[in-house]
Image 1: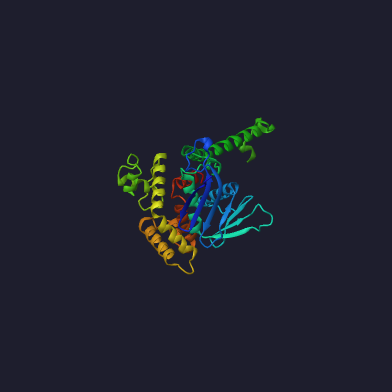
Image 2: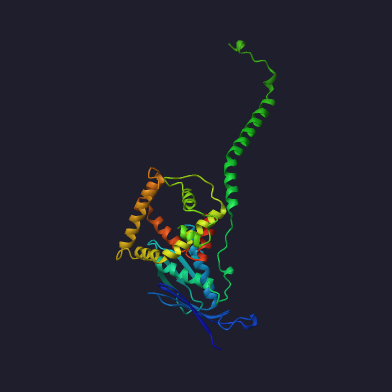
Length: 196
Length: 139
């Protein structure tokens, strides 16, 4: 059976997807629903290829890492097949781990330009109508805050200090009132003239 | 920017050039800062504009990032970008503010300049727009 092949390129990166249509889902013959192989080529770097699980893992890590960049978090991202971190020199270091025990891990150093090219290739894959690929399981999960929730947080921040002040004043007043009520000298006449 | 907003069918949210300028004046670092509450649809319109502009400018953004990556051998583009950005900040932002003074200090803000460009490069598609939006809402 003839396999379909699609390529997504962006300046220094080319992503190649090879696969077959799923006729049980009434796919037309130009579509890919079953990915049999993929290959990512970046200029001046060794080619990366693997199974669909590898592709999912790499996509997941790249998308999560790009979100961390946007959130200005400098975390090292580790997974079963790939580690990504930002180096001191501002470049992106990738450690690709093979599932085969005899293959040593491969380290790649990507510049900012190459990294964004790869992300653009992945985005093109996500937007492609010719390839059926479930991106929902790939994209990182967020605690989705909406605009209104942020405003509610703001209101909470405004109200919290006076509320705390009111509670502490009430607590202190109750404490002093209780101490005064239990004081045995409370009914004694205290004359300042006598004291003088 | 106005022609792009029309191309993106944002004429209801951003009907005139002045409406875009008013939204941009919500930046507290600007000389012409006006405190207006941005509505959700205006926030989305600004993000769409940013994403679309990043798409058009991607070849330039990429070249500048590449110059930063190879700063020892090809520093010209990155240095030009830095100088132009600082000139723009001096022209439009309130330079009396301590934050702006820090912003125009190259040594202090080099990482921020890099982050601005990288963020633009990562939001130049439909997925990139969503990425930027979710990230901003989760800051």
